[in-house]
Amino acid sequence: MAVTRTSSVPDMVVLSGELWQELLKLVTAQYKVIGPVRRGSEHVFAPVKDPRDIDMAYVTTILPPKKVFHQPFQVLFSFDTEEGTLAEEESGEEKVLWGIHPCDMHAIAILDKVYGIEYPDPYYLRNRENTIIVAKNCTEVGENCFCLSMGTGPALRSGYDLLLTDLGGRYLVEVGTEKGRKLLSGLELVPAPRVVLVEKEKRLSQARQKFKKRMITQGIQELLEENFRHPIWEELMRECLACGSCTMVCPTCFCYNVVDKIDLDLKTGKRQREWDSCMLLEYAQVALGQNFRRDRDARIKQRIYHKLLYYEPQFGTLGCVGCGRCIGACVKRIDITDVVSRLAESVESDR
Amino acid sequence: MINPFKPEIAVITEVFKETSDTTTYTFRFKDEETRETWSFEPGQFNMITVFGIGEAPISISSAPSDTGFVQHTVRHVGNVTNALAKKKPGDVVGIRGAYGTGWPFHQLYGRNVLIVAGGIGLAPLRPVIREVMRQRDRFKEVEVLYGARTPGDMLFVREFPEWSEYVKLRLTVDTVPPGVKWDHKVGVVTTLFSEMSSQPSNTVVLTCGPEIMMKFVVRGLLHMGFSPDRIYVSMERRMHCGVGKCGRCQIGPRFTCKDGPVFAYEELAALPEEVLGGVGR
Image 1 (cartoon, each protein chain N blue to C red):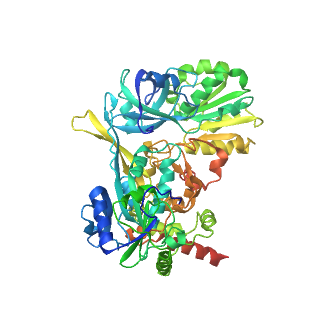
Image 2 (cartoon, rainbow over the protein chains, first blue to last red):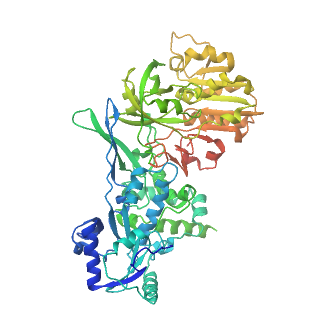
Image 3 (spheres, rainbow over the protein chains, first blue to last red):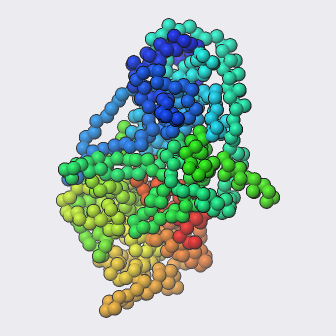
């Protein structure tokens, strides 16, 4: 990413000990920070007041950072049932999204396309513009991670405002944009020698060795197109509970429902959109009860085909970034990488 | 930034009950500039809001050359459409649009046009018929096949005499209740194929109705030699945004709201049949 220097903050610095703590203190004091925080045995992205609450060693979070931009509940406008829409207030508070992983950054880049094209979505884009993204390369790999095979990790190349890499007790900080550089401006910094990039690469190639899961992406589109009626879908139908958990935790899922919430005076209210899931029965139901995806296998296929086949013509990219959250969230342990492998194997053995 | 989710305010100026469950509403945008600049293509739809109830996609049933107002013919079958049934002239609704692809109207110039509609499916085709009437010389033979459940369920009956001066109109109903006089055909809309005068050569087909009807219409016409690349269908799906964001209306890789609702038949025929909702299984 091209960087034009406007201040004395160098493009690349190494922070350790006190300087690192000072950066965290400065940022949390100046901005609303949303970062990885431990909750019981899991992690979530949550507002951070005390920098000590940030857990940089997190592997994954329950919900992806998508929720900061495409919010689970978003008020579209207020209305009066007799008059129509009412004037709305805009909030322009600048936030910092701290420590997101490359897979989630890639997912945000996909959502930028979904919400940015044709009829740009003002709510998503407003949240996006107001947020400074500090990403973190992955030097540790979770049991469900398969970003390496999707080409979305463990190292990030673009999209971030600042990029962190854990070099063991000290952090390499790379500036991606002027928005990111701003975060470093209160510190006394010296440029890092280019040789730290060797150390960075070493850590990242070590991480690449740790992946246990991979998605077969070669020929995946033909594989899916040619196997729409494969028996595997019926097997999955018997497994899957159609609970929608996989879609709720997905960083690229964008579907929503819209509801009018009426106030107690029965006169005014708010129109709100809420995350929805193609795995749920009502999703494709229209008036008079007709449902275009009543059968569970149709909904399972919709999810998998959308992610791995339909995003491409729609947005010019695969719809999966290999974060593995859907695998972890599934109560029946359905694994999208395993589904594709089994499909590929059965086709191979039929040849 | 323009907010595509905020509807324009429109006032109901006229309510006409077409049948026991279907009403044609005439709306007038409150904002003068919108009223003067707003335009659409035949076959497009609007998202209509009943504030406090919700929003639903409804096709436009007036013609682009009907200026100063817009009409929607609504069958009262869901939350929003049932709430609309309680509205009267002077009441306010929200309208945003027009969205989606229209019928390939300019492709119809110099050609024969065959329109096949079932039930409420005639509503998005009325703009085509009205435009054909106003620009009659630009088209060759124009024939309309229309089927409904019973004679009492037929829409736009009051306009049929005028339509018949410009286009060949053939009607059929599924059943005729006892005591009702009916001079036309009885049976599904494809039973009209045996008596229609339309020929495959140089004819464009536009069809809208229940998916199962369109399936048999297309199958029948292909069998008779109509060209698959000149058949257009209008699809119904659940929609909550109209602009390709909410995801609800997807048919395979297509968004019905922006890639449709009018699709070239061949575009859908390329997809596995189950993607269309399995109506044919």
